[in-house]
Length: 424
Image (cartoon, rainbow, N blue to C red; front, side, top):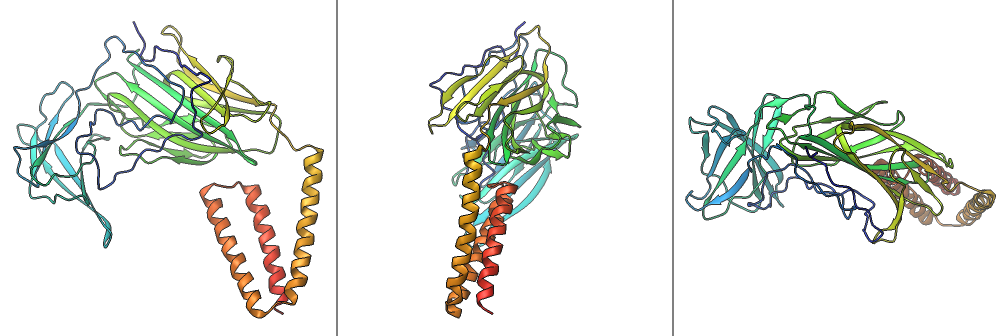
């Protein structure tokens, strides 16, 4: 038998690697009406080393969901047809039509209407608005799963015909070669934290939808700032403090992916170890790390890391592992970074001199501002308050770490105190 993930990861020095995982586009009012909905997976990481995939024996190939223009339908009409895994019609199922209105004057508004399918598995939504500012999305709730077609706009001269497939639900992935998963992990060491961006793909080769109830990907206990990128399906992750990322959503037959990021604190140690959990049936893992000069990347049981340079000129270390059919799936792996740059005596002396320079600058500024006008004091106060506001926003977005934030905020507060002292 052949595994779902049967090919090796190819990482060459000429392969370009991005420092971020590609974001999944959110639902927008103007979308392609002809886009296929055979997979709910978001885009792969930009420019990552190529990953090939071969078909598995007995791999269930889901019939495609479609949203197509139908010249036979009158304008403003959407016909929805529900079918099961083997294309039998599904009568008496509730279909929900989501409607998104967006305009410059009124902003965005949403509404929902619903109808049941008839004996032929079909239902019709008539007299709908056809405009670039109005998008439609067909979805169905079945058990605790959610099935949805890609959003679309209605054409002006005819209607749309949507075919959506509904599958039975399972809460545990079967132990079979028709199911597999992979993880792609990117690691970057910042000044006071380690930023990790991760993508998890689950390949479901069964004629059922997988809806996990308590599937947690274990992360280091001190992880923070878990953030799942938005996508059109209900797939995503939630943070479970001190445990990891809980995956939720409906994994339909085919390929499904979720992209998320998280952080761990970093205190300028020369080495760093992180244990990362994997989804069920993991058979392929790719690890990339932005590399400082001399830094080493090691993942036990993985191949030796190789260096490559991205299009942006960023040096990276890359390693991977691909399991054979007769090997048990991976449950976790450990990322080990060593020979990380640490503050030496020169840097410490430079920091001390910089601190002295800041203190001297504040003193000179204070003396100068004592001779300034009230208007100048007001102008400086407003500038500093604006800088504080900008700093708070950058910290909330995660652009700067806690140590940098505290240092910059303390300096701004000291400068503000000096400015206010001149106003007395």
